[in-house]
Image 1: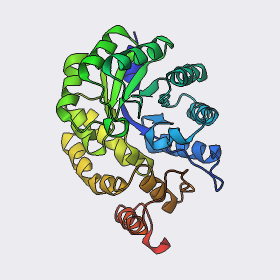
Image 2: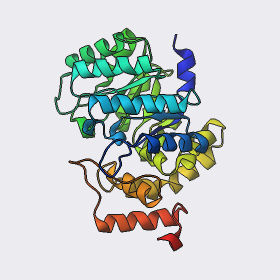
Image 3: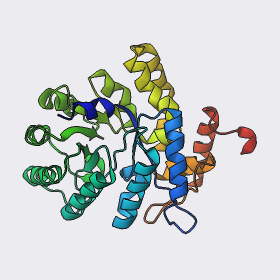
Image 4: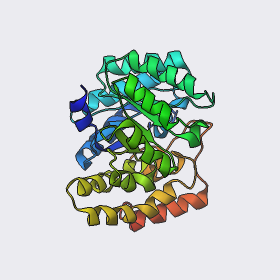
Length: 304
């Protein structure tokens, strides 16, 4: 069960930003354009309303709008995995059910942030969410944002008790923890990197892919790290991993998605608006981002 979905949910699943207009309303047309561009550029899947999509700044209705827009725009060409988690359990169940009703290929459910629940409470939370739907569920563990780490033994228990919990996005710098995920959950459990510099290393230990914010501005190269790896061209995959490192670094010198939206604005992809309490990066960082984009050929120096 879920084997077909597991095969499809591999590679670079791009975590799309939520574009806003000048009045910070959700810009669905810009979102449609971004999704089409990602598919044309080779992204293997689409995720919305994850960390990069500023979900905590959106109302429930706006999150549903973004999810529905993404699913309709992708139209089955690539899988769509919306983020449906929040600090609120009932809200998380509701959004996960709505994702299934809309036709999402899977739901990504973050460890509740700010609340700092214990491991037994996390188990109960995720089990109820998973039991409420039939679609695959990918847990999202990002202790740097949530202040809580989902322990491997808790994740393994969930994977055993909930057959539709098929994977985890690990934005976890503890690479020993990440290795133990596959040891304890099984080698067919889908392990994704949510940290840019660990995208290639995660593949090397048996990972299924990654959900990398950098794909928002360089989708082809980010996808090609996986493509080269899957084709057995390890040297090209490693080289591209290192080639992308300066770009990855500059995009995380301030809180995501601030630098990312600034870069996308420079490239003419979106209006780089953020909703408070998020704000744009400093002018000096924006200058550094601009020079980095030029060095990658993503921005014409003459146009700056």
